[in-house]
Length: 362
DNA sequence: GTATGCTTTCGGC
DNA sequence: TTACGGCCGAAAGCATAC
Image (tube, helix red, strand yellow):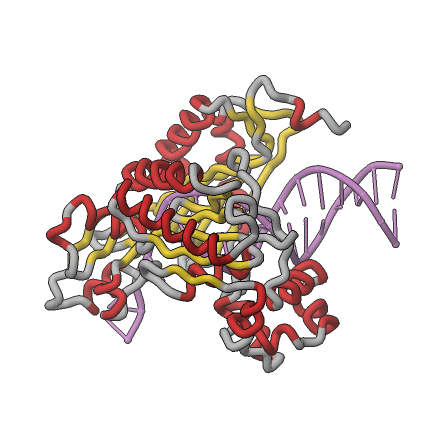
């Protein structure tokens, strides 16, 4: 049976939550900012509302740069309140979950859903269901969302991206080719600036051109698995299932250092609160880990990591400061530049008292 | 050679 | 003129075992 897959994306999420809480800022450029604390304005824009975007400001942009662009435009800068957005997100996801067959949350503000059953595989019924989901989100939390429907995850994701904010785009199986083929490859889910550039060097600019691209050439450039994905995704024919996500596969914390350094002990000192925070998180969720990594962002913003895997799951991160120090030391001494930011990551996670996930197939 | 597991990098939001 | 976070998941790259 053909599938009906949806993707829901909350519009300019963090900034919209702030607008709902304080409607008087609506209409002005609103920036939700991640301040790093190094200098007054250092940090980046997390989310910008549409008035800000129309003035050329968007997420990932340095705050100082955004401020310059918005001089005289009465911008509203708000520091990010992650817990608040987390709470709103949970409520929205529950509203959606109640109305679909399967929900797969892929971020704080987006999710895939499968409504093959509840729409009886009928795209016109699916459209009505998607419209009712949008209404329910608006009534529950005052937020607009954009929804896309299609025959696969790739099509649904691109459909939700096609019209926003407050969009509803339905791409039936019959219209899939016409929808996808003229779009630039950069719009394809899974294609970022680097892949797009490599494709452009092959004279592949649109998804239609990607559909016809030589597979051997794609394999040579990207490897077999990515090549197969690109080929299928271009046709909107990926067969990825919508599946509820279990727990996280990794947890991390990263900070910006007060000043650039190669001194591992300095980095460790500044990281201690983040290590404690992650430790508390692990303990409260009864999570053990097997792999510990130190992450560094260098002065040129390039990234570097060093990691270590233990033989058995480790429960107590705060007892690993010696290992973290060693990893930071390896990292700092092998890095071509000083560290600007430093972080830790744990992966290979398991829940305490649940060793089955590691042993049941051995 | 193939399978498997670990390390590092990439890319999305 | 420049300006620059904090997460997450996944895949490539590499090493090792058989």
